[in-house]
Image (cartoon, rainbow, N blue to C red; front, top):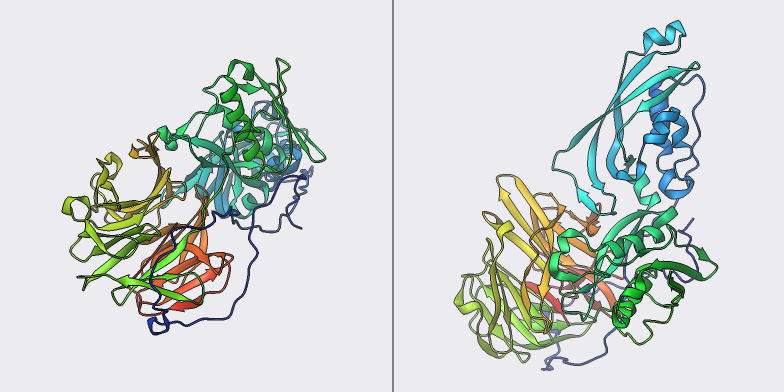
Length: 578
């Protein structure tokens, strides 16, 4: 069955739409010049995989179960804990003292496949039939990642084999677990059924937008955990890119966020100590967090002082919105705008015989030449100078507004503006020292950046960091810490498909990965030998666009699971922007 929802929770998804294949070359381009510089800002729905949710109904232990059967039964019962039963069945596999001391909320380890179990010291006690016998069961499994108490996902090391031991005792003729590590272990396929991705909407450092802070909570208590963690603060990797929701002043008055019919009820304590503006913003963040970015449901919020805050944010217009992004290509030295079957040639780029990358929006953009020079062009494709004072770049990408970002391939990042070639920010990034950057992408709201780099040898990482901005939205730096999204080797292109989903390709591969970042990565089918990725509106529908090493542009329209269709040929580079 589909995931059930409380009325008012809007499941954010876009239906898959099939369209006829289009093969369009530049010969079919309209020669109409000009670039759209205005148009409606569309509120876009977040796209995520909605697998069939299976409700788990585990069985308790049998009296004659062996130590191995007890451990396997315990593992089978764990997924029901965060989903439905609060670990009621799982605790039946434990002794009374172990059940009291075990803390399942301490964290989650995700593993792949069936764990290997090695059982020791069980035979003698079992054959004698006496109580007091002990057994040790050692488990080993391939770790995918872990989730901490705050619901933050961390990817495992490249080759992470985990070993955990459980001690069992024989009492009243039955084997039970009496020593075990805190936290739980769940196979990754079960994880998708029992844990829910939730966006805590943090306010950006520039205070003019909201930033998704992805967490993973069990279905049974996700609303309670979401509000609690929003009040506790943002994920550490976001750093100063966001502002705290309450500065630690406000807490949940009761450890529950109940729902009844179409209404969700939140009871806070000490919210009255905030200013009226602070209370209003906090209510707005809670409303959008519990509504998956939507506000069209009934939310009742009160404070322990008796203050009713349900309408405190009625005057705040800050929303979870993404402006529609348009696709631009560089083909035969011309920049082309593509939004449907009509290809509009905007103009020819002068003096570029060996251009290799494009960063373009409705305000203009830049091209990266083979020698590393970044040249600026306005919206009419007229030259506007050389960006970054002629510094050599290895990769470029669009930011927000008139921003063009560049990396020198190492620890240097810079942000230039295409309104005259001025450089707005240039800084060294300590966590990039000694590494070679292969790809980067800036999130739609501009407060996060994803960077893929090689550590040297066969080691690679793709990380996400927060982007600090001032009140005028100028970039002032990146967060000091990062979250690792992937350790896959050979990432050569990355894009934000929407505000939460990151898609990336691998060199010389038929596939790549997608993830609700940060979260477990899943395989994403891509055209063979993809070298660039972008996300844009094609026929007014969000689409993933891929460029291969033969110059073919293809798109998957409406869903990341859609079939790939041909869009254009003989293309050097692609870009998307507002």
